[in-house]
Image (cartoon, rainbow, N blue to C red):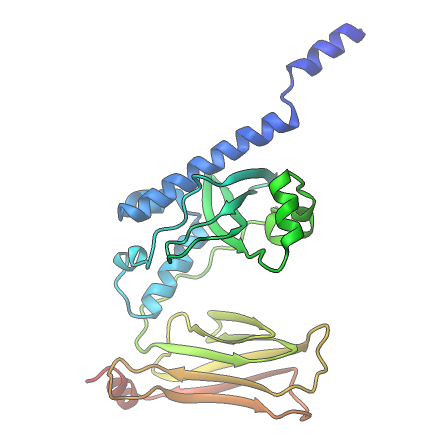
Amino acid sequence: MKPFILALLLCLPSLSQAQNSLGQDLEKSYNIWRTSLINKDVATWQRVTAEHRRIEVRNRIISEKLPFPAAIFDLPAPPPALTGLKFLEASINGATAKSAYFGKVDFGVGGDPTENLLVLSFVKGAGGWLYDRADFVNLTALPEVRKELASGDLGYLKGVPEAQPSGTVPPIPIAVNPARTIAKVYVFCPGREVQVQINKISRHRFANAKEAEVVLGGAKIGPNEVQFSVAKLEGGTGEEAMTIRIYLMSEVETVKPVKVFEYQVLENEPFKSYDTASFTLDAALAAKLMGK
């Protein structure tokens, strides 16, 4: 019996062989996706991109009133090539997978790239692995980690959530209608997590941030609902200043953005942990913003 068991084990692929095979499949998918962007090949891009990501990209583009699908390919530089990067590992969890690379990730912005970490994410589709997203981890402040990864020590990856497949495929978002008016939500929230939802469609999360995001579907004529929640982050005091604003963006150079919603808390002031509010967009203002 023992020789039979040994022979059976010898026929099974090793962990490294399975990883290499998975890594090759994921790399092939990424390279096809990358080439589709360079060649402006809509059909191939749709075929090799995860469904939830395709809809997210479409939603963002039409919410900024840009041409779809042409704007998919309007990039300052092509996605980075994997040529010259060191393959670290590939891992799988259910219908999700990740592949990690180390080296001089070149985003085409000039200069001499330094050695950093690039993690690619994929989800399983009917025809194989579909590209989802890329996470770039800057290791400038982690010189010891750079040495470890260069030497083949992958311990650091185990503590990086972005490098581990979750096993959960992101839900398919609602396909929004083309925006009538471009809107953006701006949040300043040091020490806090703020979640904002506009018209029950456009969902946004900000953590210890000062940034703006496009409102999916834009603002509609008539009332627009705004829901938000606020929570203190670890390390925060709960007494920091905070601002949530929504702006309607002008398509006319001489017309400034219009602030239509604001919730602002000064330092040491109490804040609402949850609230529902609204703003109204009338046809006259929409026409002014569109230059009509």
